[in-house]
Image 1 (tube, one colour):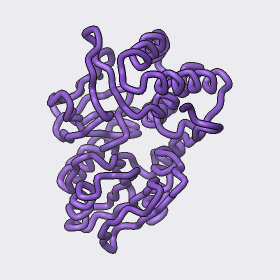
Image 2 (cartoon, rainbow, N blue to C red; image 1 turned 180 degrees about the vertical axis):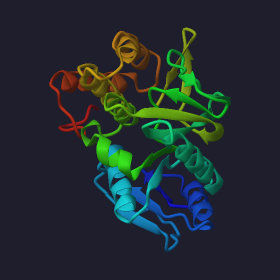
Image 3 (cartoon, rainbow, N blue to C red; image 1 turned 90 degrees about the vertical axis):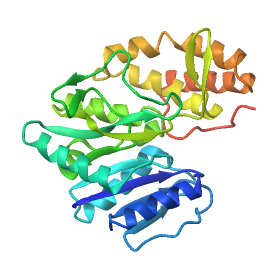
Length: 289
């Protein structure tokens, strides 16, 4: 199977990552392991696994670029991106690759991802507004997919380009898919392959609405990148309509309903200010306290 995997780490659950690596190594699948943790993660690596360590944290976008470019430069035709908390098997990779090849016969395809079984809701995730268009019993065409489980080809990656390092973390996967759409590529989600995945740290219901409760610093990147991406013509209008008006509500919920509300509010404000100033990359300057 001419396919490898990119796994991005940041202070991971070592036991889970090791079990994932062991599963992939048992099928001799090439792996690019890109670690943004401050210290090297203690793992037992197979000969088919290449380890990259960036103790200063280059962000998820650049980490994906490092892994993808390594695999493609070493002759692989396809690669799957995984988060450190995803559950994935070699059989899933084979099934996605077979579907990818079938789709290539008809479509100019950028990426194919599995359906996502959310471990918070215990349900398969379906977009609220953009549910996609089912083209057969096995796959639906969608606007975007998340990075974890995303399969792409060397040829598509070469034409569409690297993931946008300036975004650092939030919005990276969607931006790449939207950029691909602009270039005439299609994005698909498999209905035959379903991957368990944990998105965010927690879910909290406030006034009947569900909010993700992650690390405070993530609010900086989320707010900043909403403003950065909303200025771009290729970013879908429905996405702008969903995220821009929600900013005041998200501030109120994070500031007054979540723990460390004062700190969370400061990260939101800093993100909005830097978004207005068109700043990108890793958060700079003194962090809110």
